[in-house]
Image (cartoon, rainbow, N blue to C red; front, side):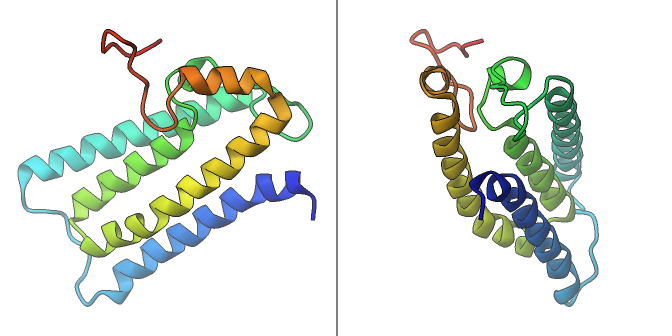
Amino acid sequence: MNKNIVFEILPRVLFGVMVLCLLLSQYLTLWPPRLTGNIFLLWLGIILTVIGFSSWVYVAYYMRVNGGFRIKNKNLLTKGPFRYVRHPMYVSVSTVLVGIGILFFSWVWFLILLIFAPIWYIECKIEEKYLIKLFGENYLDYRKKTGMFFPKLNKKNKITL
């Protein structure tokens, strides 16, 4: 099978499996989903969900407008949300899911997230190997300057922009 096709399809399939597991987890537990009663957790969950969803939409829009990574046009995006982290889409989705987990205060939700976090990490590592082959030294330089999921700090403990 073509590596490009696997690279394009695998993340979508894994994301779909994760969402299905999360939805099933809500129905397989014997209690109905309900919002947390703690006002602090409620607002924290709402804020994380809104920030995560907003950044997810922004990253998707930015990738679409700037010819993000696709098989036909091979652009390395290093500006916009990619200026801060190499995988902003994963960060956005994780933020949304953590926010929803806090809103509904579901331990099963967090258990599934803990199972999928290493899978996402491995998926990102595979993606980075492919990007190194595709972009070579350009990607290696970008990787040195930019954190994988968290912004890198410079020597003065400031986020590099």
